[in-house]
Picture 1: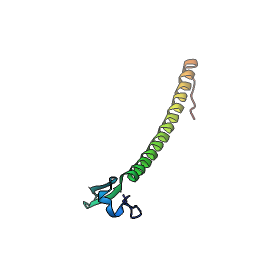
Picture 2: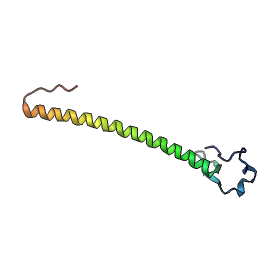
Picture 3: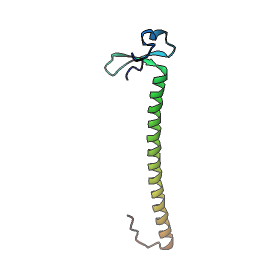
Picture 4: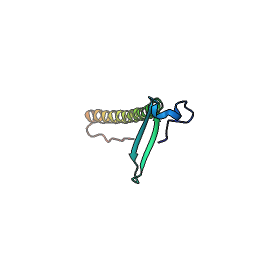
Length: 94
């Protein structure tokens, strides 16, 4: 995760007084403490874009599963109809 508080901002030199400034600290997998210096509006936009991308991917996965489920339902319907009309019929499912 990169800092979103950048030197190009006019408040960068006074960032600790900036109402949009925030620090986030955490430990990574190696146990090292990492700190990011963030501009709240920029970080919010980045996080919203990430969430949107995840929602779009989730929607695509749901649609794919829905289509597979629909195909299975159609095949099962055909099998049941065939068995009802001719119990001794041999079924060939593709």
